[in-house]
Image (cartoon, rainbow, N blue to C red; front, side, top):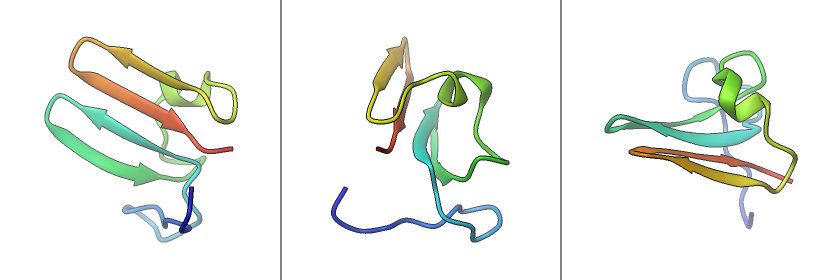
Length: 56
């Protein structure tokens, strides 16, 4: 990841990116979906229309 992203809900440092059913956002530990939290750093996962990426 070249640049650091901030959580779109609170402004903390984002731990990853989640796209759920058309909406997408950078999120911190507090606002991440449980599916994103279950990923290891650097891991990406797709579940149908959902895309999750945990930053390393």
